[in-house]
Image 1 (cartoon, helix red, strand yellow):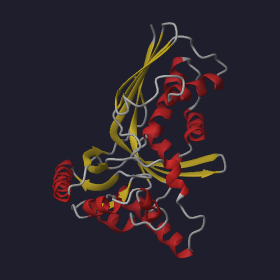
Image 2 (cartoon, helix red, strand yellow):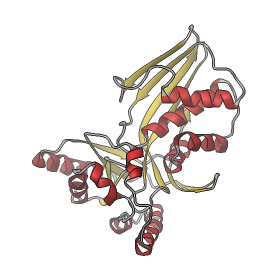
Image 3 (cartoon, rainbow, N blue to C red):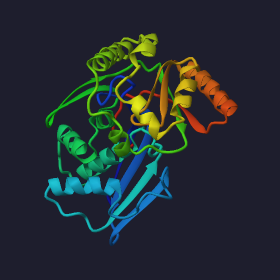
Length: 303
């Protein structure tokens, strides 16, 4: 029985000012595997979402696999044993859906030896999932700057210093991306556009040149976070706690509600995480606190 495995990293996007363009791959990974055999479709799920995600043909990983089968002109194999080990929190702005899409595309491409190029797989993933800033770091890893020009994709990938760590605060509750889009204004002022443009550029320099103190300014935003806080009113409390914990910069990850700040070194990251946990208990707020490194690896076949 042939078996294929793939792992895909969690992603953090926007970083405040870099709306829909900046993304990071984290060391937290979902792991997927598929085997041929049996009489029908079998989907086993462990970890995040194991009691809520579908185990039928509506499953996102399976649907992504089918997109590859169709692209390759192949019929869907009758017997598929699909296993999902989900470590990325769902509905928190950490790229869980992007991970499933990338994982499904990669599994099917390997399984049927379709030989679809990575660039074409990225295009397929964007058509499927819709968010290039999540898809790119999930595929290629590292720190990515992405532009979608019509249907053409342009991006730059940077490998960051391994000492840079992310401290994540993951509150209870979820924010649906579709709703997070609906609350955004259709027009913004020239001043707000310049405010974000200059800071997003500064974030790229701050991260690639390891000048982390600049993040306290560069991750400030006027285009999306203030509008989305109506969907999760307590997010202001979580941002305030993260901002006061001693890290570099602070923003909502993706459409939230996860919040990220940065640290230089694992020891510093753990100290910041401990302070955040203390403040959460003091304020009686519920959230998980996770320390993760920035990974240069995107999807990995066989691991």
